[in-house]
Length: 177
Figure 1 (spheres, rainbow, N blue to C red):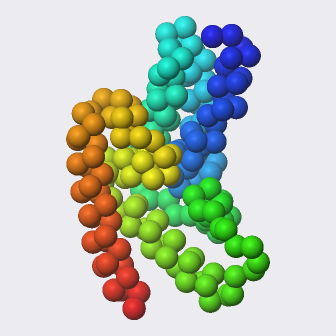
Figure 2 (figure 1 turned 45 degrees about the horizontal axis):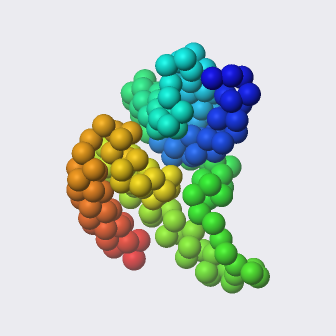
């Protein structure tokens, strides 16, 4: 892999890798560090990487780095207001042609917070698959290849994760009312 090919790879995949790291770590500075470390590892292993699998390799690499970071922390980090706004921008898009009424904004903000909270409560294996499928928009096949699991296992885990998300959301919404 030449330097130009590597730079193109970085340009093409850095946003998705950052989203994965940010969603797992919930901290933009830590996520940037993990993205940088992922690209350093990619450069170091460039001779052994295949073009058709390098994207999955990088996503798995950043995920492993993030899990290691979380293990080192041993505690939950909560989003501050600035990072919360970044998460809103990264994960959700608004398709308003004009300014929405304030009550709609408040309701959507509350719902997004509940969904984020519910996803955070999922076990890490389920959370990873939900993120890959829903936010990274990966196919079942891509997820299976990245996780080295059968495709049916990925589908099954995603089914259970969605069911668990509904249960968590029901519980959270009851406490909100």
